[in-house]
Image (cartoon, rainbow, N blue to C red; front, side):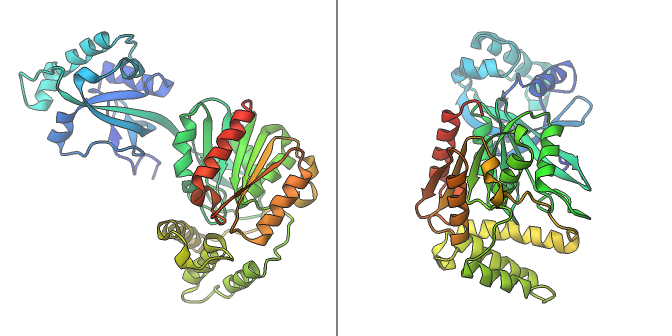
Length: 409
């Protein structure tokens, strides 16, 4: 199965020269909007597009060539289509009048009228149309030593890499991926080894070397790394092992390689997880211990946590546990022992923590801001370990402020 198989098709015009022209414009980045007749959706019995929906762009040969994600949908009378939308259709139109003339020619063509079942179909200012904006999402698998990483990339500009936490996957960044890609950044997210769609390892591996290999594959010279928990751990290790590729660090609920777990609450649940192996309901109980540690945390009962958030993390963690039971990861992760090498980090750094997170994570943050030159700490009230999700507004404000203060990163 390829990345296209699970996506609905996105077909521009009819197969032939016009479709070839439009598909080329999508692939080049010139085309970021499109316009369709509401009547087309009604005749096909299809729902209107929704923001966040993805589809596969189909060429004249019927082959998928790109993935796009809808970023805006408006249903408006044809007479209200504005110049910005017309220009962003990428067909060379500088005025709405020129855009309108070409589109009327297409909608009034015999082929289109036949498709609509009306030989006299005619548009006017009041004809309802669906004006969509979209972005191209590059999806792929990057080879790494003894495996491969599934990644997605979108946008253009200074590069941001989003690194998820342990037992999660790139989906934890759904709220930020599109927003950041539309803000003048190239945004990359990926599933770490043994998570999501990436492969497991049949031997020892280095997560920071995996990230370096991915950046090399994507021809990224320098990037700002935004990491949560074990993703922050990878980000810090990368800044130490491969300092030349790291422009800045945004560390959320940071883990640190080489640090010890001393929080009695976390120790208790880790011991509980060890007892799950081989038990009939072991996977279910293993995930529940994970939720108690890293969703609820030491200071809350499950009932105090947003049930939608808890269910979302349960689903992702369960999928990862199930996948690793079927194909277990062999070997161990080789790390940079960052807790002893924080002084080597010389890039702008901000670290965020939820006020309800564990003492171990608070200790990691204290080490970072006391040793890394200029590092700044942000404590998000009311949030636990999942600070980017529970404290989304505070996280996004802090991230945006960091990027404004360091526009080159």
